[in-house]
Length: 520
Ligand code: KIV
Ligand code: ZN
Image 1 (cartoon, rainbow, N blue to C red):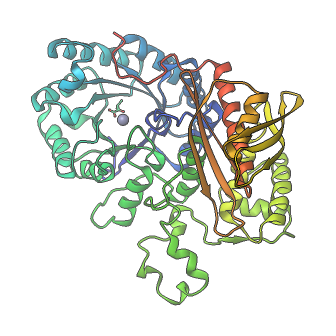
Image 2 (cartoon, helix red, strand yellow; image 1 turned 90 degrees about the horizontal axis):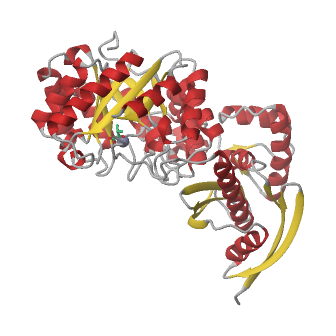
Image 3 (cartoon, helix red, strand yellow; image 1 turned 180 degrees about the horizontal axis):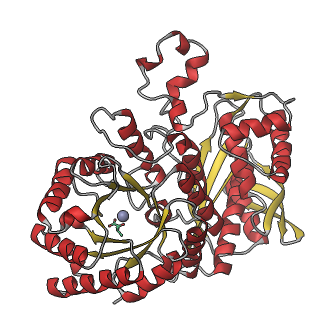
């Protein structure tokens, strides 16, 4: 339990529950980067992954464990000795390791491992004891707690506490509960389960009915002192409680929610953008706190907004979440130093070589665009980090379009160290260009998602394109930005192919789809 009774621990599961979202798979380096940002923003516990799921997951969790400076590093394992031991192997190097183990306790979930209530109770005792023999900090979750019979829930929570669990997490796995019930459930568990006052109660909500943030905050009112959440609310189906929402709700309405977190909220915007980029899950424009329109009225500040009182429409300041107010940046004559400083404001600190590369791209962009906005620069950085990340690179592209199909595309693609050229036709310029890529780099990957987003306003706006492809059990997402939508599309496609080949080489998940099924 934290010493301050109003201190709420923030447990981030972007890298586990968030990454579990189909298509949100992140690369090893991306996971390390996001973990570093979470650690720096003051997240108390980072759930870094599910170590038994694959070699890649194991390595990512253990490297995050070795490098985290402050946060507790947690790994997830099902209720069996193999998962738990593997989890311990991955987190044991952390300054502050945690094992999180779970089992589905509701009637719907008990049917899966085919255990009776008594058998499951025994399993919980054995597995939590095993985890506790390995690690001092053990979290236990009765998955689908909100649909578990009250008597049985009390019984299993008591067993887990007796076996040594230090945190009891109450998941609303299917997003079924509502605020009044969420608060009441935690309050009653704390009041009625023997030993409950000696552990931390945690809440883990899914957003299927759009109540994940409200349910998490209600659970805190009921006595929970840990919130499990993800950046941008990333997560399976409708997602998880969004970190930025609960943190800002407690900050802005501290008068009625007098709780404190350790989060530096000014880092929210940057991490939100990075998670959106690496996961390929764009943030909806009207998303609370981090959506493009969340502070849209602030864009008018230059003209007349300043004349009025800012609190007419603002309950928080854009600066509070790290949003820079300048929307127009630099002219085409601005130098490297200005670019470096502007990128720093936006939360990016490129090394010298990366800055040189970005500067060349910036100049090219500034030549093509009348005004370069903050979002253009963010897209530029994102695009640069996507490029050169693999052995395929687009060197040249020309498409011939017209009202008459088929359209055709000429492409030069660098494959490894050699340039290859092909011409292909298709139904539309994007399809023609993708066919040309396929001709030069044959593959079986199927397109799952193709999304175009105009980054800034105007006819000369940059387009950010997201492409998600699937081959066998592997999913990869690529993103790229350009003032030319077809160029951005092809680069995003190639970026996704690069990621897919890296994933293939690394050997992806042994468990193609995360399953809650018991391994026994
Ligand atoms: O939603 C859920 O129940 C989970 C558990 C593994 C905690 O993610
Ligand atoms: Zn979950």
